[in-house]
Image 1: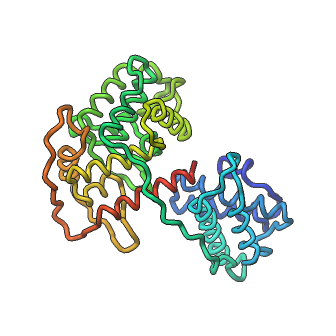
Image 2: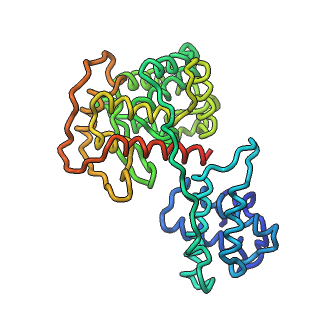
Image 3: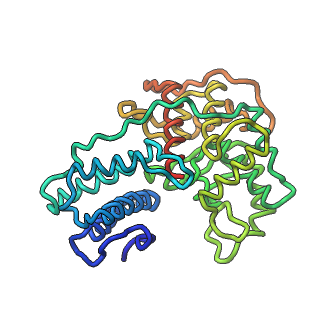
Length: 360
């Protein structure tokens, strides 16, 4: 059975067993069998669908008809393409679409569908070095958090989501995928299941965020939940799952209403959490574990540290970890030999923000 969304995304002759549509479907099925996440498969579906459509309108219908010059023409098309907003695709978005094609044609060559891989020597766009993304100061994040009307059920839910984001540094899809039993109130931790790269991890969460989660679970979630309850922590007013775009829209609206002169939505809480913990004296490697960064670069592999240490560092360095703020802590040593720098960590966060914008 074709994956969800193929009918809308693939344009071409679906009856041709040797056509781009058929081979694109087989490729995605191959990735599914290899264990790619649903989120990753959606990205591949989208990239292959756009390429197949572009080829179809140029009377290119089979993989055997595609050459390196054709791929270079498509690369130029991506560069000049304008979205509905009138903005061009970011270089990160262009690169992601081309990477999907490189994997696709490499697989076709291995399957002997094509004699040679036309994408093997395709030069990928360089990602420009961007200025650091905006982050909140401690006072600014408090202003944004206070914007939600907690006398209202939706406002209390939104305040809770922002508190959890600020405390844990979760990614957008990680927050929306939380189950209510993933939050361990006794230990002060959150289990992130199938995070980026389909890796599970345990991250600390502060007392203040837990207080808001309890209020939400007691006062709001029972109002929203619709049987059968699948356990998702944060629900829409109709009882369904919250969409990525909805969350981005809501949080951007709160930031604007707060009067804080900075742009952002979900990722700015993640970036702020990491930066304020660094300023509080946290070891880079501990923050690295909390954020779920497997590596800070292609050569610096991150060393795992215990959740006990991560929880201790989080309590001492995160401004919102405790209901009553402690004095600024001395830097906490993680006791390993790997020495990633603060700038490395912030560079990764900047890259994540660019990727998130590309996804949007």
